[in-house]
Structure formats: structure tokens, C-alpha cells
Length: 580
Ligand code: M5T
Ligand code: MG
Image 1 (tube, helix red, strand yellow):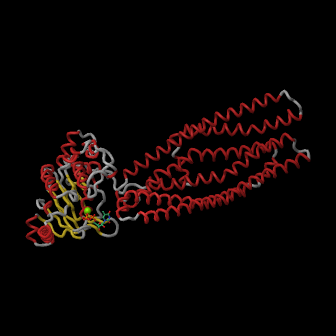
Image 2 (tube, protein in one colour; image 1 turned 180 degrees about the vertical axis):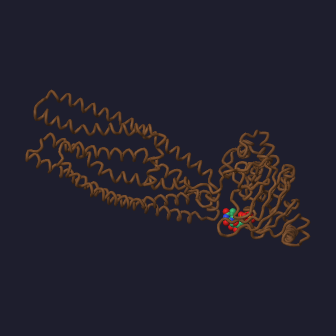
């Protein structure tokens, strides 16, 4: 009920259109309600009393009513369609906007396919209800009660026979609704699950094909699809059971009224014209009964769809601006971790991390896979919040800073490169949409991307496919480095940013980066020792803790984990002629 009320609330900005819609719908109904009164007159006055001169006038009135009905119907549909389309637009915009504010943890928990399902199918369900469902409900409701009143003025006895049926119909409607509601919920969830399967399959189609798992994927899909079929058939089953009952009940009304009418005529309490008039109302009374199942259907579908949309809208971002944010006067790039502890859920990922990076310094983070390197740098831009301790950027706790300002100062090259299906030019200037071509070229040069871009037929205008399809791994990474450099950040984070390039290119990137990272605090996460050797501070992470810290010389002298890594890589070069 709550979500139905909220759906109606969405119509508020369009109340003018909605009111007009309802007004014209009322006109449609009134013209219908008047009609039997005229038929009654035709029977009584024209046919029985023989006042033939009235016929033309009455027929013209009927014609006029039909015309009014047609025009009003047109206006009504127009108004409601417009209002509902606008609401759908608002809801889509609102939902998308809201999704942009949600934090990483939301996306860790909610699947893309499911969110897409809300944005499309569920939204359309709500719109459908607003455009048609509500008006049908209103139309049938008013018609029903209007017909009752008009019929009552003609014959209260006939009306009472119909009223006697009402409690039964109400009970059946209630039963129908309570049975179909959970089925709709299930269908909605299953559709989301199915969409997720499709989305994941498509996103990972290379893996599917490489491992020849098409058959498995097909079976998995069919399994989910069969479940959806099952739920939909269940809905049909419920529907199939209740529709005939409601139709049957409505059909009983005709003989009941006719029988009552005949008795009344026989006993001289009713004239024939009135009986004809009364039968004219029977249809108006029984039609809403027949439509009731449909109305309940549409209403329940919309409200279950809306539930999840509202659920998303009600979720606030877990990471948001402080109510009273502190401004950082000068962004120099000083970073301090002060006894930081962090976890995604229960399992601790980082423990007791403390270090300082002075402006312009290069900090290398090393450690085995899963040691917490990526997690550590994610805390800088407040992708997640610490559990305890503080992360300070330029002396101010990141939680006290405006997210926008904080993030604008950090150039982030994520471990997994993501590019948009746009031109390289637009991809590189993603963080600074007003950047000129010269600036883009300069950033590309610094990232060692210029050469390969110049070789492309359309150069910077080359459009890359979804997620960067059409580029090699190293080309994608270099594009991502250029993108990060272009925003001229005071802090640069390179999370395994050169893992996919060959040693020669990595060397070149480093030579160029030397220059571009001047004056920026740079975090380098790398596995190749040569990339970290010159860092001002090397942190060796081991299971979320800093196991060793210091410069290359200091750590070598320590003969600990770092030294061991160095030895291992040296062995692998001498053994395989491979790379450090
Ligand atoms: C550190 C866990 C992961 C690992 C630990 C990203 C992510 C990680 N983890 C989660 O539970 N949820 C997440 O969303 O955290 O992970 P990391 O920081 O990604 O490790 P890394 O960057 O040092 O590893 P790698 O492989 O990139 O070198 O236990 O399960
Ligand atoms: Mg990582």
C-alpha cells in the first residue's frame, strides 16, 4: 500500500494534467450513465406512448453523447500518457542520478543485471500502471458507483439484489490479491536474476568461449529461464482460477436483475421502459467486476516493481560529504596514514597502517597478491572508509573533505583498466572534459601512449569498443595513465599500471613519468623491482600489515622480505633471461 501511495505521489508535479485526465474521464462516464435514461425514454415515451416527434431529438442527444465521449476519451488518454511518460522520465533520471551518488560498497553488493532490470522492466511496470491502471481503476470505480446510484433512482429493489453480491466479490478480490502479490514479487526477482546471468555471460564471453563453457552457460541460463517460466505460469494459474469466478459472479447479476424486474412489472411496480433502462446499467455494474482482476493485477505488479525502485532510492550513499566540510587551502599532496585499520566485511584487510608521504615523494607499495595494496590506495580517495584510524590528505582527514575536491586532486590508474566506448580523445580527457587537444596529446606523450595513438588510422578520434575493446592491454593501461595525468593531480596512484606493458615500454614510461610525476606524490604498486627501486619510501605489505619499510638500500641491508623478492627476481632473470 505504501509503495502504491508513493507511486501516486510521483504524479504530483503533473497534477494539472492528471486532474484534466480525471475530469475528462468523468465526462466519459457521465455520458455513459445518461444513456440508459434516454433508452428508457425511447421505450416509454416514443414506443409505448407513441410520441414519435421525440425520437429525432432523443437520437440526436445520443449522438451528441457519443461525440462528447469520443473527444473526452482522446483528451484523457493524451493527458494520462503525457503525465505517465513524464513520471517515468523523472524516475529514470532520479534513479540514475541516485546510482551515481552510491558508494562502492553498494556496487559490491548489488549486481549490474539486477540494477538494469530495475531501470527498465520495473520502471515500465510503474509507468504502465500510471498511464492505464489508475485510470481504469478510477473509471471502473466511478462507473460502478454511478451506475448503482442511477439504477437506484430507477429501481431500488433491483439495485439491492446486486448490492447483496458485493461482499462476496470483495472477499474474492482480496483473496486474489493476496495470492498474486507474492507471485509477482517472485517474478520480479527472477527477472532480475535472469538479466544478471545474461549480463555476466556477455561481460565474460571471452572467458566462456576460451574455456568452451557455452554449453554450461546455456544450461545455466535455461535453468533460470525455466524458473521464470514457472513463476509466470504460476501467475497465469492464479489468474486463470480467479478470472472465471469474477466473471461468473458478474454474469449472475443479469438474470437476478431480470427476474426481479419481471416480478416488479408483473406486480405493477415497474414499467417496461424502466426495466430496459435498468438492464442498461447491468453492464456498467458487471464490467467493473470483470475488470477487477485486471485492475488488481496491474496495481500489484506496479507496486511490487516500485518496491525495489524505492528501496534503491531510499538507500543513502554510505560515503558522503561531511555536513560541515573542511576546506584544504593548498593541495600539495601530503598523505598520512595514522594507525589505519580496514576491512570490507568481517575479515581484516589492513591493520595498523601508519606512514607519511611528503609532497612530491614516491611511495612504492609491494607485497604478495592479496596483501592489501589496492585496498590501501582506495582509502586515499575514500572509495571506502577506514574502520579505525585516519587517512589525512594535506593535513585534513579525508572524511572531513568534500569528496569532489578530494577526488579531483587524485589521479587514479586502477589495476583493471576501464575505458568507455568513445574516442581516445574523450577517454583521455574524461577527468577534464574541457581539455584541449594539445593538453591531451601532452598527457598521452607522458604516458607513452602518443606513439600507438598516432599509428591508428583515426588517431585521437579512434573510438574504442566497450571496456576498451580493440586496444591491447598495455595500450589500454597507457591510455588510463594519460587520463590520470591530464587532471594534473597532486597525488598520482598507479596500481599495477604497467603490468601489461613490455619491459622496454615500462622503462620508457618510467623515464617519461619521472618528469610528469615531478611535484606529485606518487603511489606505485608494482611487482617488478625495477619500478620501485628509486622510490623515496618502500612499504612491504604482508597480510595487511606493513612488514618492512624504508628505501631500497635500507631494505636490502635488512635482508628481509624485500631482499628475498629481489633475490627471487634476480634468479628468474639469470635463470630464464626474463625481466626484473
Ligand atoms: C586485499 C579482499 C581480498 C584480499 C584483501 C578489492 C577487494 C578485496 N577484498 C575484499 O574482500 N573485497 C574487495 O572488494 O581484501 O585485497 P587487495 O587490496 O585487492 O590486494 P592486493 O591489491 O594487494 O592484491 P593484488 O592481487 O592486486 O596484488 O584478501 O580478498
Ligand atoms: Mg591489487
